[in-house]
Amino acid sequence: MGKIPFMIDLTNKNIVIVGGGKVAERRLLLLKDQCASITVISETITEEIENYIDNTSIYWYKRPFRDEDIIDTDFVIIATNDKKVNEHVINVTPKHVLLNAAHNANEGNIEFMKTVKRGLLQVGIHTGGASPTLAKKLYHDIEASFPSDYSDYVDFLYEVRQLIKLSPLENMEKHALLKEMVDCPIYDKEEQALFILQLKKKIEHPRSTK
Image 1 (cartoon, rainbow, N blue to C red):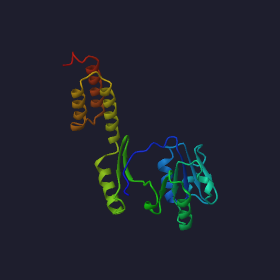
Image 2 (cartoon, helix red, strand yellow):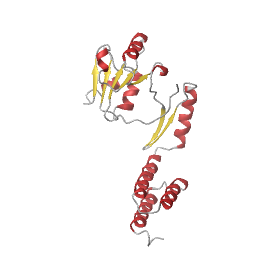
Image 3 (cartoon, helix red, strand yellow):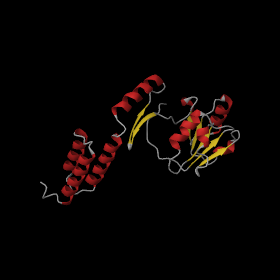
Image 4 (spheres, helix red, strand yellow):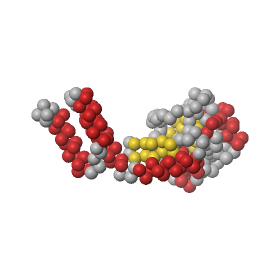
């Protein structure tokens, strides 16, 4: 069956990464600030991974994988180039556990999409294995469409939405304001601050601003 994209909260999850090479490194860097703990199991690790081992939530077992390593684990990532090890980890991982198999995406139930991130905004790209080259091209196209400071605009939208949601304004007026923020974007920080100020006044004194 096919897979669908979704966002997942890993805040209180424990993750095991089997492998210590570049693929494991990329997974670690992506997840290190998003979960309760990460355990890396590998006889060798990259220098970048080693830099994070002193972190209280990242551990390194300098040895081969053991079946008991995934007891009470929420998410297993296979990132080795050893076919036998990869197959063994797949076989012993419980069906209810999230599993990412870097060597063959079809062997796991979770895949990592190529993602463009601008603050709260995340755009994921996945071609279902049809063309990694296309995924790479789309990544660069989307990245070019959203400059690095676009995150400031997204943060502004978030603040506006929270204010509007809590306001006594009529639903139609709320929807109109939210639509206006997207149809007529405000990128300048001073203009954003002014809009927030005016919005607060509108919310506090809805009748006087009509």
